[in-house]
Length: 77
Image (cartoon, rainbow, N blue to C red; front, side, top):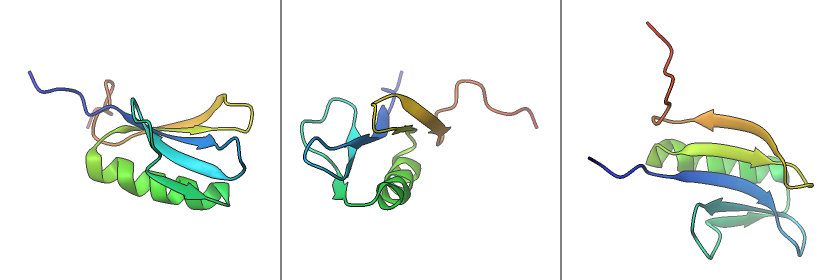
């Protein structure tokens, strides 16, 4: 069975700005001054890798979530 690709998160950086991080990674995939820039970049990465995508607020709580190819409940067509 193939390994699940994991997820990417847009999270606030303690030093200011926003980071795009993959589950289990010690380093970020990118650092951005503006949250929207981090969201745009993170969404592209997540779409390319078929991962879940989580957007966190400054308080660390998840504000939004997208699934890119790994949706456990895909829409019925």
